[in-house]
Amino acid sequence: MIIDSHVHIFSFPSFRDLGDRIRTMEDAIAFRTRYPELYKCNLTEPPVDNTDQLFEDMDKNGVDIAIVQARAGYVSNDMVAEAAGRRADRMVALARVGHDQQSAGYLDDPGPAREAAPEEFERCLGTLGMRGLGETFIRAFTTETHPERIAKDIAGIMRVVERHRVPIQFPTAWTQFPGALYHGDPIWVDEVAGRHPGAPIILTKMGRSITRYFDSAMVVAMRNVNVFFDVVGTNAEHLRLAVDRIGADRIMFGTDWSTVWHWLREPATLHQVRFKVLEDAGLTDAEREQILWKTAARIFKLDRLLERSGAGLVAAV
Image 1 (tube, rainbow, N blue to C red):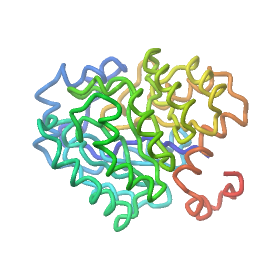
Image 2: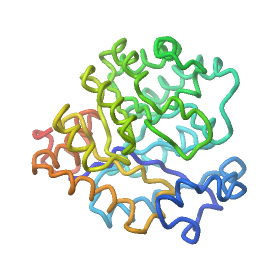
Image 3: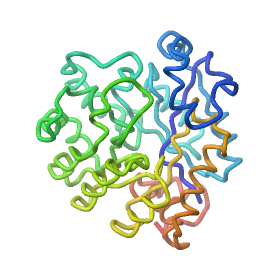
């Protein structure tokens, strides 16, 4: 069993074939700045469902279930919920708010977006049946940089998370999107986690192999048992240290699959890169199994989905 806890769905017509532009990880990171006009299509073109492409990659790499969320741009939660609902045997949907700002630019005054977010998340978790909150870029809701002020500004969002006991993802380190790099150091999450101990918080990318960000993520996780990691972008040394310090039961597998990252093939494909980190970290069979699916199954409450799959794995979660 493999659960990919970090997948972004939907694409745009102009992104249909990026094979001549993206071969390496460096190509994907620089895509926005190398091809600015092409990249802007996510602001002008209607989103298209690319889950058939996702399933093709999942099947090639033995991935059973994908936990999906919108990519940056004008992709609505309703679109994601509908797409996941068509293949509810293999997809679980997460809600996002503020991801439009990642592409279109952050608001000078994020107050209105911040005030509207809790109601939208309530709708997503209730009416749409989503299982948590996807990557939440803090700059979409606050211009503050002091941890206590950040925690105060997003308290409304965190109360929704805590009330529903669903996870929320906060990205760490860098992104290929413009602005807000200063929130990539997750030390501020300590204040949020401490104020909302009933909220499962996932620090995605666990510092993305950059030691200063990994150290911050580790400090926060060691102080707060409600903080978890996914392995996107990390390296074997950091993963081994994290397993030894906080345990494999607080770490989950993820690829960050998207319409852009899907095209990686040198020196290996996206899934091969992510799996190699697990191989090189010297994990035991039990640790590997925990990371590949057990942690995500528990945190995202996938018992019923596993029961329907007939995998006989629920008792092991």
